[in-house]
Length: 202
Image (cartoon, rainbow, N blue to C red; front, side):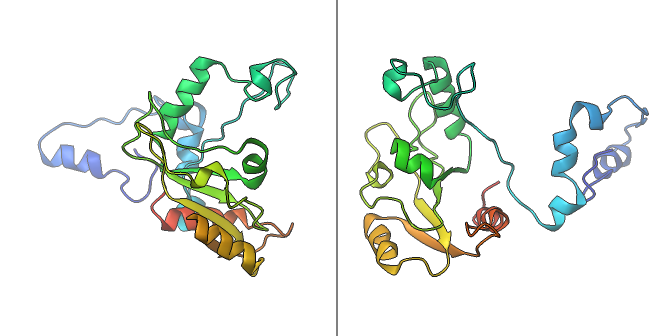
């Protein structure tokens, strides 16, 4: 039986209505062991307060460093060519790429989709920037080059943040959205998840 209460058992009933004999075998698919993430996805709490499936992606060295040692990757890349290609494929399959302003300030990324990814369906590019520190001339705001795709850029900040910075980002092509502050004075991650869901991010 599908653990999702919205359609639990419906598929079995359709089979039975069309003359197919259905037998349920107990303990053949212990979901709690083989797919706990699926049970979390169909939990009552997630259905009550829906939020997108989130994939965390980062690169680090064997020694746990997030910044490459001197002389490696031009001081920028830890990932090898295979991992960089895998990232492009992943970008072409998701609805949004979400990053913090720290990454924008440190790396000035574009977050575009390039081959071998599918640039025809570029994801939203979302920056969590509570105090609007994203530079108005960041590479995010440049038009994608030939053969690459870049979705709209959305900057999520705390309501009431610097109106001058707000206008500068709008002029650069960003859409700026004001959210509630969390207890640490940054944007509420729960609000971020709800905002993403409301825009069709799954």
